[in-house]
Amino acid sequence: MANKKILLCLVIAYTLSLLVLSLVSNSAMPHFGTNYEDKIYHLLAYGLLCLLWYKVLFDFKIKHPIGIAFITCIIYGIIIEVLQGQYTDGRDASIMDSAANGIGVMIVSLFLTIKNKTIVKKI
Image (cartoon, rainbow, N blue to C red; front, side, top):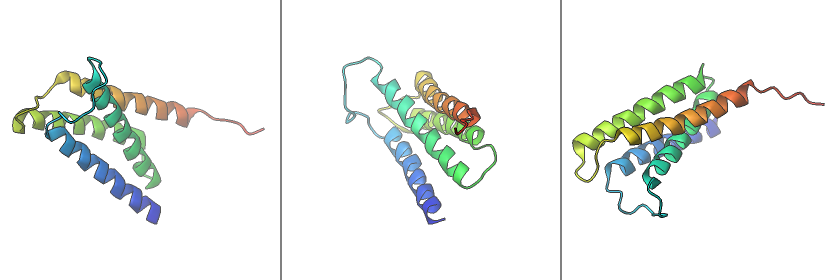
């Protein structure tokens, strides 16, 4: 039970960190020389967010953990994009950022769905 609570605290901390990092200037992010670095960061960050929330929901035996993690992460990403457009000076709301967030969430959700439906027989 203690491990579940620790994981929950870590996932909440990650979720809040993602919020803070999304609302501050992004000039400190490392650059790798591609045009789509920002989208890659979004995809990875929200894919990880979905995976972590799935793990918490699964460990707490919540019904439909993949669906709940999927929907909440998509909504969370949209809310953050709206907040960026409304309350920050150096950042703008972006449909492409929301799309990258959604793609990251979809990839993880699809992977988890396939993983959970795959039955491996022990020989």
